[in-house]
Length: 158
Image (cartoon, rainbow, N blue to C red; front, side, top):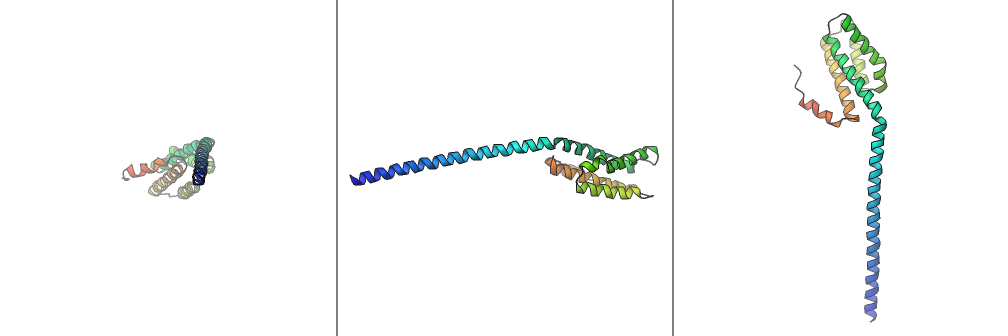
């Protein structure tokens, strides 16, 4: 009879331990789910806070790349001067608020060539492409990861 009592007591203890372990596992899983939900909410809120900055960044990146690309393909004259003026407005103004270091370096290189009295259109075109690539890479890191696939689908320059 003592053996039966010992076995019953051990079985009871094992049942209680199993119940405690199951409860701890369930509590841990619920806590993990709650942690994941909080992290997702925090990420969503961070994205919403950054959205105005990212939208402004995209707007000025597009304008800077279009302006830099148009300058070497526009004949000297009033139209080109308007583009050059807009480049320097972006350079010293709005773009400087949102650009990252790589875009800044690309704009500086383009601006240095643009200041040359006999700036080469071919050189400016190459530098405009570097500005565009720096802007693309900046956006890729911050906002649109799938932009990287665009480069592989783009035909080679002619």
